[in-house]
Image 1 (cartoon, rainbow, N blue to C red):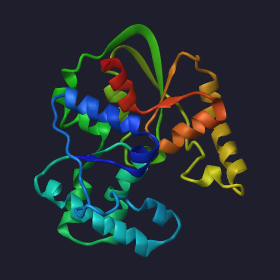
Image 2: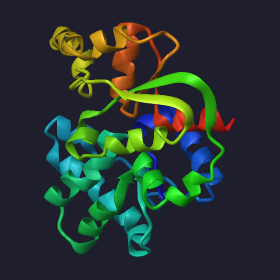
Image 3: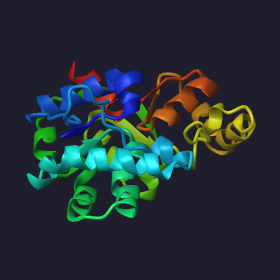
Image 4: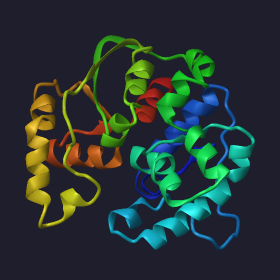
Length: 243
């Protein structure tokens, strides 16, 4: 089951399309959850409400999402996500806000795209024809939620299996964007300073032909805004090689 978050549904649907391409080429049938009623809004994890302190609204979104995902959870299917901040809301905040066996089981079944490909989906992934000319480098920046949940290593594990691709981690903390923090006039300068601590100097040492990989929507946009370099989701890297 592929959880379609707001960012990849509306702002970067090419990431979603590429993820579907990779999963189907690896032999998997991809399911998409819906909220049930035809007039209902698409599902949302509610993190934006949480970040604004609107707990009741966040709980409402959480209940709606849990209800929609219950059939997939009951079937024991992996719940795969693309955006770290959204996916790990289901794993962390949902059990804190809601009670019930389904919520707990849902938290146990959610995983990032790369975690699935390096775990339950490893056999299908191993059969993908992925290769590139030697000498190509990919520098990976981890989203804060990926690091907090020890999920960042799966990106390296997956990309390192591509013949000809050299994978290195960008030794940096938070990119500084932190949701809308980097776009607010009163905090934008602090956001830039955070990026200047580690991330921007590290990117400055890379070659323009090197790939910059970042699963976080906010991370990719911070990189683009401050370096004019294009960050890629891991799904984009894999799908590009398949084509």
